[in-house]
Image (cartoon, rainbow, N blue to C red; front, side):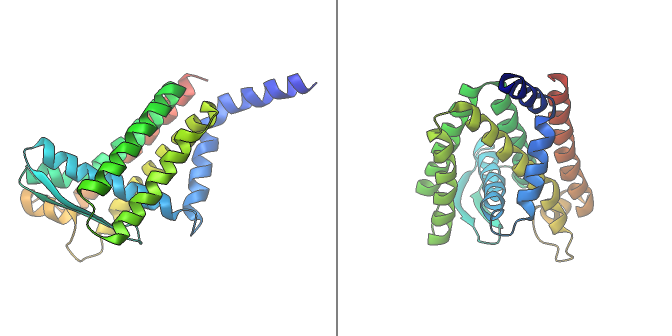
Length: 225
């Protein structure tokens, strides 16, 4: 009887795991204290995406700052301004999508990617962190990924990484809307100044990218049911 029950549970999870993890991510986002590290996580991937875009286009990263409220700042020098400004929200979406996809592909892939993200966070602390708050936030994020690496059952690591990916995607889905505050600040305003395309269009593009990424993950999960 217990074998039948286990098989039914396994079948239910296999069929509905995307929705279960998605609902868990939505609930976590609503919990004031629990959601804080995951807001920091999206902010970190946003800022590191600016930094990577700067380096790829011939510039350099001078400093990364993360703040307790989930905001962040990446100070760069040189590079292509358009690419750097666009890369923040788009990059966070790509990170969230990529983390989920890699974790879904294979348990060892999830573990390997966890190690890479941990090393990236440590490198950011060493090379680009300049203040105590940023170091503290990066240390918390590093500990988060270190915990996943230390998990003995790779099945749990895989699910945690999928959850992290969805949380990052949910944050990147809604965070561009904060730019529409009338202050004419941030990536959208910078792109509007460069291109003469209104800020709300850039916000819509970033929102659409995150929505497409979520739909892509849903379709992939449905395909393998």
